[in-house]
Length: 460
Figure 1 (cartoon, helix red, strand yellow):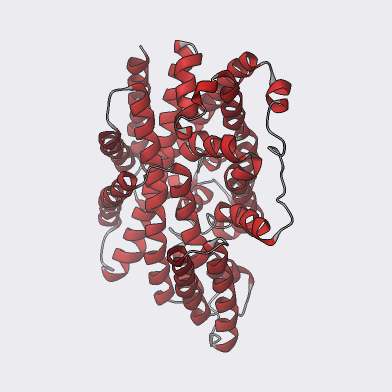
Figure 2 (cartoon, rainbow, N blue to C red):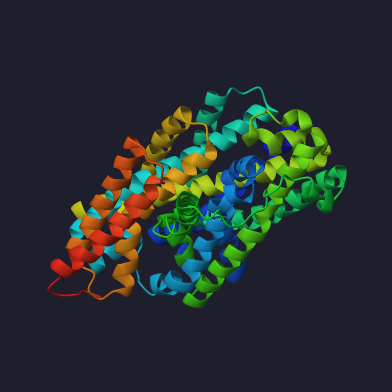
C-alpha cells in the first residue's frame, strides 16, 4: 500500500510539473516563472528553498547527538539567510532586469568578474544536489529493496526529467502544494510520537544537561565554531542562483521582500518539528541509539505511524526533496547557459538558449550523482556547498551593492584568494573552522584591492 501511494504521489507531482511546463515559453518563464508569482506561492517557494533532506533528516541527526548548538547551521542559519535576503537584497535584485545573479558581477564590475564568479558558483551546487540525492536514496532504501547506489541513479533520473520539462513554474506550483502536505505530515507525526513519549514537557526534561544551550562556552574555539555555524548557510547561501531565482519570480519587488520574510519565519518554526520528532523518538525507541542517525525519522515513521501517515510523510518528503533538487539543478544550468555559453554565441536565439539550459541540467545531475556516491553525509555535503560560495562570492556581491569604492580588482582577488585560503586550511587542517580563514581573507583582500586599485568608472 505504501509503495503504491508513494508512486502515485510522485506521478501526480510530475504530472503537475508537466502541466505547468506549458507555461514555459522562453528562458524567463523557465528560470523565473515569468516573474508572476503571487505572495502565497512566492512565500512557499522561498520556504522550500532548502527545506528538504538536511532539515528533515540531516539536522535531526545532529540535534540528537550535539543538542541545540549542533543545529545552528540549519534551521537557524538557513532562516537567517532568508530574512537577510528580504531585508537587504530582494528589492535591489528585483529592480535589476537580469536573468542570473552572476549578471550583477558583469554590470557592477567586468566580464572577467562575471566569468570568474560563474566558474566558481557552479561547483558549489554539486554538494547541495548530491545531498538531496543521498537523502532520496536513503528513503528509498528504507521503504524498498532498492540498493543505495542504484537509488542515487534512479533519483537523479527522476529529478532530471522533472527539471528538464518544468522549469521554475513547475517548481513553484509544486512547492506550494508540498509545503502544505509536509507541514500536515510533520505535525501529525510529532503529535503521535510526542504523545507516546509522554508529552513535550517530559521529552524536554529527559534531555541531558546543557542540551538546549543556545550560546557556546566562553572559550575562543567554541565561539569561532559557533560563528562559523551561523554564517555557513546564513551568509553563504545569499550569493546563490536558486535563491535569486525565487526572489525574482515574485510578481513585484514588495512581494519578493515579503515572501523572503515569510519563508524565513516558516523555516525557523517548522524546522523545529523534525528536531522534536527525533528527540522524542530516541525516548520511545531506545534501541535506535546506535542506528544511522540520518535514517532515524524515516525509520520511526515506518515503525510508529499508521499507513496513511506513512503515505503522507514519505510522499511529501520525497516530493520536497525532489523540488529542492530540481531548483538546485536549474540554478547552475541557468548560469552555464546565460553566463558561459551566451556571451560567446551572441546570435543564439532564446529558444536555443533554453535548449542549452535544459541540456546543462543533465550534466549537472551526472556530476552530482558521482559526488553522492562518494559521500553519504547529508549535513556535511550541504555545509560544504554553502561554505564554497561564502568564501568566494559573498563580499564581492554585498560590497558591490553597498560600497561605492568596491572595484573589479578587489572583487576578483576576493573570489580567488578567499577560496584558496579556505581550501588550504581544509586540506592542511586547523583547530578553527577553515571557513573563517577564507571569509576573513576574502573580506581583507576585497577592501585592500578596492582601495589600492580602484575602478576608473563605477558602472552602477
